[in-house]
Image (cartoon, rainbow, N blue to C red):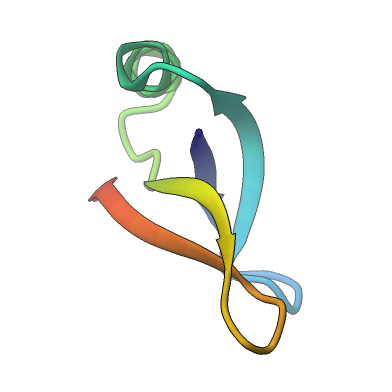
Amino acid sequence: MYQVYIKTDTGLDKKRLIGEFRDFEKAQEKIEAELAKNPDFKYVIEETNGSVDVYGNLIVDVVDEN
């Protein structure tokens, strides 16, 4: 599962979820659509397989970001 986030400078969280995708290509399409609207768009794509650590936090890997 790939999760696409917008990087933000406001609020407690520094990123906001805009979509979850099974395919990396679909996640990239979402990013390309957002970049077409706003060239200054900052994003992070994270991949997860549903595993959690000993504290119950979801384990994620950053796949792409700008």
